[in-house]
Image (cartoon, rainbow, N blue to C red; front, side):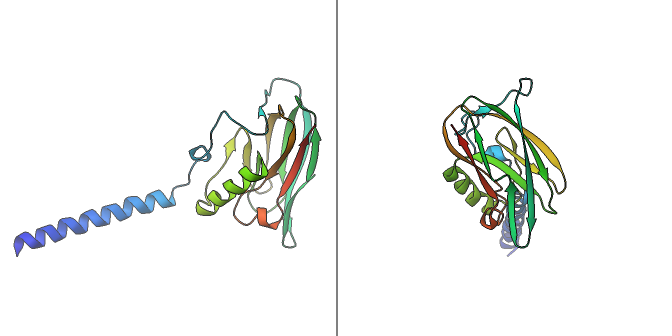
Length: 166
């Protein structure tokens, strides 16, 4: 019976340790780089902060059951470099993620599974309440792209906008 008790104690310790490791893994924020193919961006490429850029100020807001960006539509020329100056006027964290509509929707599904994931990538920034930040981007491809807040629930409340590259 002593041998059986020792085995049961060892199994209990192993299960407890495994549960603790799993709980830490689930609770830890996942860096954005864990699921993105850095170096390849659909909407162009990271800009050079030392070079001239058109400045576009974007306001993030929430209220009355809605969330959004102002402006929600921006037109740029292919080859143009833009310095996005991001202002979060709200009481919640918000993000600015620049990609295609399809990529952002796929990313939003990942964010639902990992809501604590934070972004500070060349094509995305998380901005704290009443905070601000910048993102410099060079649009090398023509087409229609999207900027969005992918924090769970925000996209669904209207927090996305369009960039038309001509």
